[in-house]
Image (cartoon, rainbow, N blue to C red; front, top):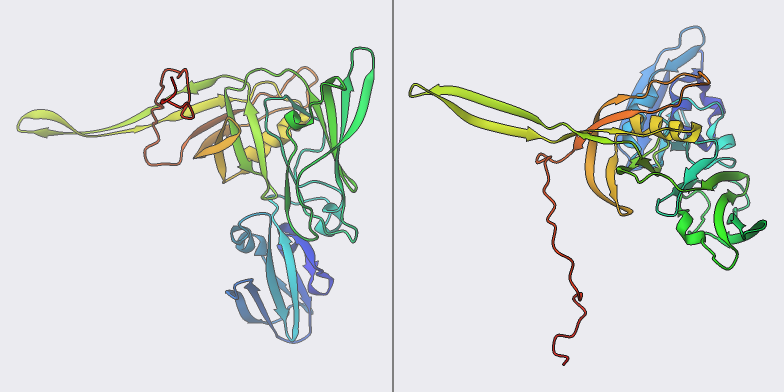
Amino acid sequence: MINFADISSWHFVTELDIIAVTTATAVDVSIIDASNNVLINGNYTPVGGAVHIYHLARLLMPLISGVTADFTITVGSTSKTVHVVQSSFEVSEGAATFLPSFFLSTVMSERDTSLERKELLTLLPIESTLPTVIAVCSYWDGEAIVTANKSVSGTVTAGTVCELDVSAAQFVDTTLGALVAYSITAGERTMRYRVTTLPTAERAMLLRNSFGAWEAIYFSGMTEDAPEYTRETAMVNGAMKLYNLEETAVFKSWTGPLRPSGVALARDLARSKDIYLLESGVATDAIVVTAVDVKHSTADNEIADFTFTWRRASLWSAKLKAVRLPRLFDETFDETYN
C-alpha cells in the first residue's frame, strides 16, 4: 500500500496495488493512461479518515505492453504522472531504488553461457548521471588470466528502456586468449557470466520476463514430442464416419540441470505470457506454455531440473520443415561464367 502523497515519478506496478488517500471528506479520483483513456473515475467516501483504492495492479498490468507505461493519477485537484514499471511480483525495493542498481532481470547470481548462446540484458536508467556500459572480460592465455574492457553496443538514454546484446561471441579476442568469463557493468549494475562448454540445447526460447524485458533461455535436456488428436465420428448410412480430425503438436521440454541463475530464469518462463521459439538466435514461432513443473527444494543433494509443456500458438500447431540438399554454390554464383 502507498499513500497518494508519497507517489513519485517511478514505481513498480505492484507498489500501486493499493493507493490510500488521507481525507476527511469525499474525494474525486481518476486514473487515465497515456492515450487519455479513462480507467477509473469516481467519487470516493472516506472510512476512518482515508479512502483506499484496491487491486490497481490487476488493472494496470495488462496495459503495460513492455517494460513501462505512463499513467496520470488525479485526486481532487492534484495530478501526478507516474512511470509505472511492469512487475509480476512484489519487489523488496521500490522502483526508484531498484532501477539504478540492477538490470531488469530476476537473475541475481552468475550465469552460465557459451559462445553459441544469445544473451540479452535490459536496463532502465533513471539516475542523474547516465551510466557507461562496459564488458569486463577475462581471458586465459595458457599461463594466467588476462583482463580487458570491451565496449557494448547500444544507446543509453535517460528514462528509456535500453536492450543490450551481451552474447559471449562478440567478446572473443584470440590475441588475448580464450574467453572464460565476463561482467557487464552499467553504473552500479553488474551481471556476471561464466563462459563454458554447455550441452547442445534441444530448444531455446525468447521470453518477456517479470519486468517485461526480453531474455533467452536454453533447454539442454531432452524434448518429448507428444501430439494430441481430437477425433469426431458419427454413424452415416450405417457406417462409422470420421468427419473431423484435429492435431495439436504438443512438446514437453526439460531444462536440464540448473544453477541458481537458471532457476530464476526458468521461473520467469513459467510466469511469462509472451514467448517465442529461438532458432539460430532469431525469434520465430509464438508459443504457449500449457503446463509447468518448477518444483524444487533447498536440499544439498538436489539439482533443479524443470519441465515445460508447450505448443505453437498458431491454429496449425504441427509444422513441417522442408529440408533441401546443400548447394555447392549459393545464389551469388555467376552462372554465365565459363
